[in-house]
Length: 224
Image (cartoon, rainbow, N blue to C red; front, side, top):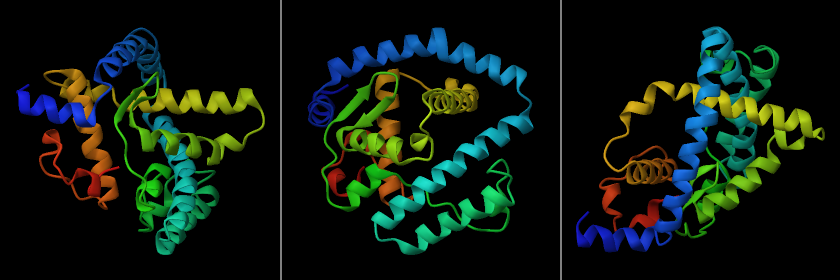
């Protein structure tokens, strides 16, 4: 990394030394616990069942998406996601089948971190959260809100709530098993840059931000 890149990174990642330590912890937790569990899940669960589980949790995300679209003042997106939830929860057998997509109803992907961005809340520095992975200060507050506001968060039985969260995590990790070889160079920087690019694209309605690894001066206008 050049001295210029280092100074820029320090502005957006002032906690890099701590973040790297947490990144190592997360990597070890993944290597010795989560990844082996995901591999067993992937091996014993038929593809059609995995697709159903993935659709089920996407349906729950659509509930959050509808709420956040409403908070953002994007009523047409809120209506789209609400329609998706109604259709997939009924015709799609509790969300196991994505009938809404087959009918051409688009999914609005958003979260409360995105909502805070639309309200003008600053992004804050990049942070690596224990077990939860890459985030920003703003997105961390969003994650807490989304976890509570989600249908899973409204379950009053702890065993059922955490069982669903664990299944969601394992299913998500299983879906990433084929992507592990994409990481190159410094894994920490690769994950950080990829995460910030994805978050920036989300707030820009899917448009990628150029030169994200250089942390452009106008990033704060476009990022999450």
